[in-house]
Length: 127
Image (cartoon, rainbow, N blue to C red):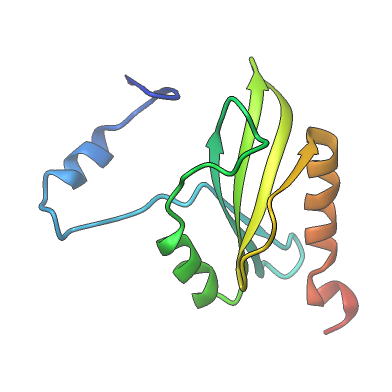
C-alpha cells in the first residue's frame, strides 16, 4: 500500500494504467447506488472530502455525467466534511439529468435522502 492524498490504498493498477499513454484514460466511480430488489442503477455519485461543505467544490463530473446518462440514472456531486470516521455535513448537487442547486445537510439528512432515492425506484411502484 502506498500513501495518497486521502489515506492509504493500493495505487499499483492506477499508476500502471497511467503509464500506458495519455490517450488511454479511465475514471473511477465513487459510488453507484442501485436498487436492492431489481438491481437498477439509481444514481452515480462523485464524492470529495472537503473542509467546508457550504461551497461547491471544483470537481470534474463530465465522464460521470455521461455514464449516468448512459444507464438512465441520476448523477450527483457530493462533498462531505468529517472528523475521523464520522461524517458531519454533506453538500449535494444533482448534475444529471439537469444541474440542481447546491444543498447542505447533516449526515442524518443525507441518509434520509439516500433512503428516498432508493424508495423512488420504479420497481417499488410496480413499474
